[in-house]
Amino acid sequence: LLFSPVMGGAVGAAGPIVYVGSTLAVFVAVLRDWRIPGLALVALGAAFNLAAIVANGGIMPAAPDAVATLAPVSEAGFSNSAVMADPALRPLTDLFALPAWLPFANVFSIGDVMIGLGVVVVLAAGMRRQPVAGAR
Image (cartoon, rainbow, N blue to C red; front, side):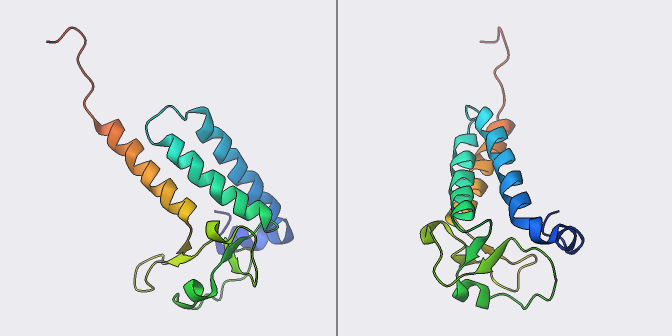
């Protein structure tokens, strides 16, 4: 919701603080349950993202070439990422982009990939059949 036109415009200059705070809250919640299969990977990806965001003043830097592949966006307000000339922790920033022809195409980081893979593991583990007590 933070990156929607309504909320992004409402938070304005507080966007980076809200972004860091909400990302930190999710990281702590995930870290509490790290023993669930896949959540350690989600936590590591979130830690990578949080490190990049904090190191760059509350904004996730995006690679110019990745942003250039996306359709132009005219929405005002806070955005989840922005092009920066020389970002700190560059390998952890948004270096990749989904093709513009996909719905909701956006830039993403290695942390986002780790979060996505971790969620897949969580879902797959959750769908496994549990052994029936007393069954042989």
